[in-house]
Length: 329
Ligand SMILES: NC(=O)c1ccc[n+]([C@@H]2O[C@H](COP(=O)([O-])OP(=O)(O)OC[C@H]3O[C@@H](n4cnc5c(N)ncnc54)[C@H](O)[C@@H]3O)[C@@H](O)[C@H]2O)c1
Image (cartoon, rainbow, N blue to C red; front, side):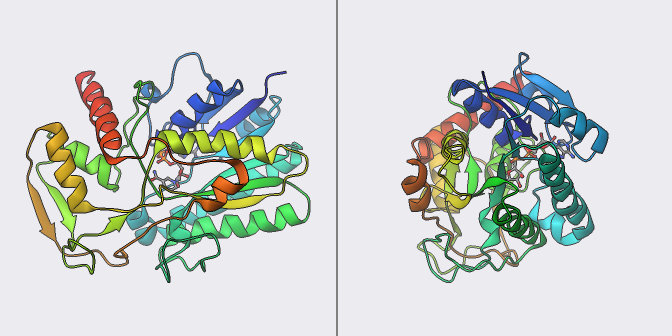
């Protein structure tokens, strides 16, 4: 029988790509989303949808009764700056909300759980590339909220209540090549949505936070991983987790190499054949100079490696989707 996989936050930027990969793997995605940071455009019509919040206990309970084999939780609030201004919102949604979700998953005897975690759990790097053994000392409340859930998952798994994987994404970028996911990120503080909004004249300039870092060109270096690679990783990780002999695990999902802000700007201007206003402003507090992942563990455990994460592909797929999105408005 086809496995039914519940995607909480499945209409979002990453969730809509994961839903696609789940379908391509021959499973049935069941999407629960309240559209608070996404719109229906992101998802195809034929998907099974439950519209509403997973924080709504009655709705969550009725959803989990629908013959669900595994749950993927992609619905955390994700703005680092906002988590520092309104930690109570993040505590409520990301920590309390996820605990309620997990307890209901246990109550409904669902065995498998995938958590969208983040590289922010590591905090300032003590060495690079970051592997999963690196100390976890988050420097913002968002990262703290992810770490608390990972700790809880560790306990629940040890007490044989659940098998889980926590996937620590680095900077997720790009879009499905065939443009099957058209939801653009709303109110994002991430670099690619901000760049796209500048190119398509929603913003009149792009701000570079700091050009005096101890890096090759003075701007920050980050690890950018294509969303289609992230989506495929969920399928591989879940297939691995479902093997009777496999254990719960935490692993990084990154490209394994880093790109500077100025390199992105140069490549984007070349590919888009356009110029736009760039202003250098003060570096933000708590922005490390350099982040880069080791994805060795994901490769060893379930054979994953990035296939779509080269910069030109990231830029082209983003430009195509944003163009289509703004044309449709
Ligand atoms: N985008 C990144 O670079 C990145 C990096 C690391 C981790 N993550 C994590 O990945 C997950 C998905 O991120 P994204 O970039 O797709 O974000 P997103 O905001 O595009 O998607 C989140 C989805 O969850 C939905 N949602 C929010 N609250 C909900 C609720 N209470 N009930 C039901 N649905 C709700 C939103 O409407 C949206 O569709 C998040 O947990 C985020 O913390 C993202």
